Image (cartoon, rainbow, N blue to C red; front, side, top):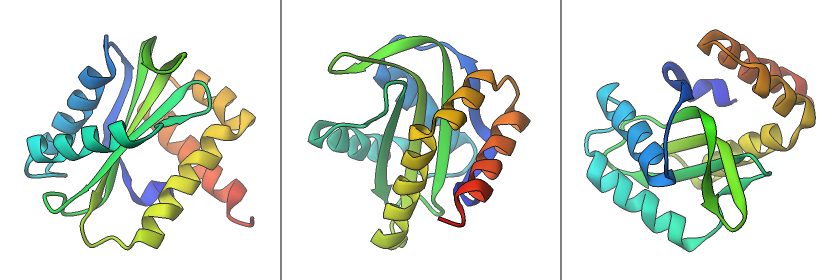
Length: 154
């Protein structure tokens, strides 16, 4: 399911960031450069509003930031693998950051399915082990597709 929303040109592997705002901003700018949204500032305002409302951690190593916006023509997921973990919230330092840009017309049920699929991946020990070993964009895409096949019968 997630492979319907990811693109190879929305993945940053082995990238550096000092703060969560820096990596979220960078992923949003990447999405705007790839025509996945028209107004980064408006989208980011919504993302940061959501960040204030609750926890965005999945497991101990990943964070998911997201927002719904009318400036997003199609739902997309951007991903960053950080070379050095960054402080996110609580006592957590994360190495993986997902940014989900939901289009305004995507149904709430579909958004929930995307969140659930991503959470299932990030709570799966085999997936996390494989994620640590990802070095190429193609590897990440293959891992995402493989995980879908493994969990599709559930």
